[in-house]
Each structure stands twice: as structure tokens, then as C-alpha cells.
Length: 143
Image 1 (tube, helix red, strand yellow):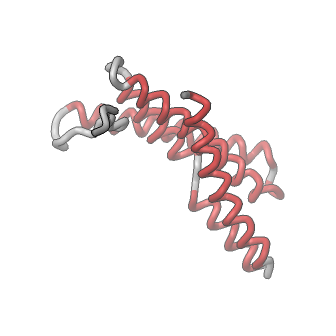
Image 2 (spheres, one colour; image 1 turned 120 degrees about the vertical axis):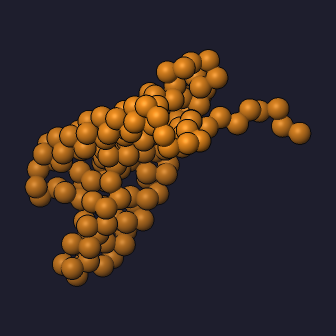
Image 3 (cartoon, helix red, strand yellow; image 1 turned 30 degrees about the horizontal axis):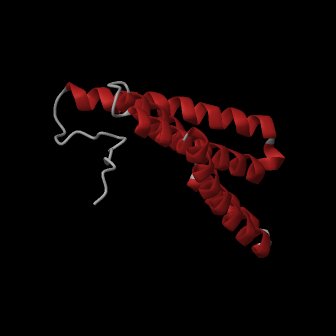
């Protein structure tokens, strides 16, 4: 029998009433606004001709940050009352809005429409594989 304690990093409430839920929604929304703005700035930095590379970059970097956040907040959840709010702000809000599967699929579609089917498939596989690898690396780095 395992003695390792399971921790719900998101610590979602069992009911959907009360100020606690509204405060959590606000925290997620704030993180989401910051994450979406950060993604936009990264895409501006890459320029319009490099959209697939910019989306790949934010998805891989965001996955690594999410892995780091999940590991950090899971480890600190047992000792900190701030852990849940910070996890909602950073992992759910910021990383959730910073990374974007929809933008990756739009880029893959555009590559496919330009008859670059092999490139579109490779881009999609690379995006998913690197993002999963970055998430695992981020979690490992915080251990």
C-alpha cells in the first residue's frame, strides 16, 4: 500500500456557490488575460512570417512552465494556503491561455492547404511531442 498522499492541485470546490468560486474564477481570468497577452507578444516578436514557429514556441515553453507549476504547487499544497490560488492563476489561467492547441491546428491547416501535407503532419507531431516532453522536463526540474 502506497503512503504517498494524493493532492488535487486545483483544489476545486465541491459546490458552485459562494464567493470562493467567484474569487477562483477571477484568479483564473486574471491569469488567462496575462497568458493571452504574453502569447500575443511572443507572436509579435517572431513576426507574421513565422507564425508556426511562434505557436510551437509558446506551446513548448508553456507546457514546460505548466509542468514546473504543477510540480511546485503539488509539493507546496500540503504546507501553503496560497498554493491553490497560485496554481489557478499560473497553471490554469496563465499557462492555459499562453499555450494554444487551436492556434497550432490553424497553422497545421494552413500548411496542409498550401499542399505541404508532410510538413503539416510533422509540425503537428513535433508540437505535441515537444510539448509533452517539455511538461515532463518542467516537472522534473522542480523536483
